[in-house]
Length: 99
Image (tube, rainbow, N blue to C red; front, side):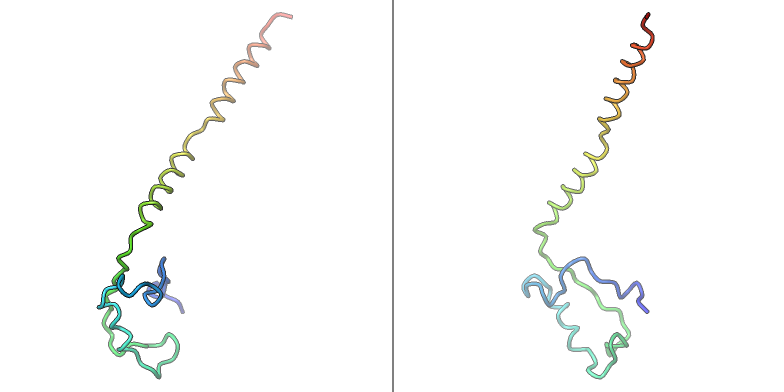
C-alpha cells in the first residue's frame, strides 16, 4: 500500500542536489537504515519521524509564481463575449428597419 507519507516530493532528491544546498542534518539519515529490510518495509532502525529539510536553492521560485499569476489574470478577461454582444445589437437594429 502507498500512504500519504510515501508520496514523492515536487523536487529533486537530496542525493541529486548540490551538497552545499542541503543541510547536514538531512544527510545523516542514511546511516540509520537497515541493510536487510525488505523494500519499503521498516527501513529505519527507529520509529521516530524524520525532520525533512528542503534545499536552500530558491532561484526559480519567483518566476514560477509570476507565471501562474499571469495565466490566471489573462484567463479572466472575456473580450470575445463583449464583441459578440455588440454584434448582436447591430443585427437586431437591422431587423427592425422598414422594408
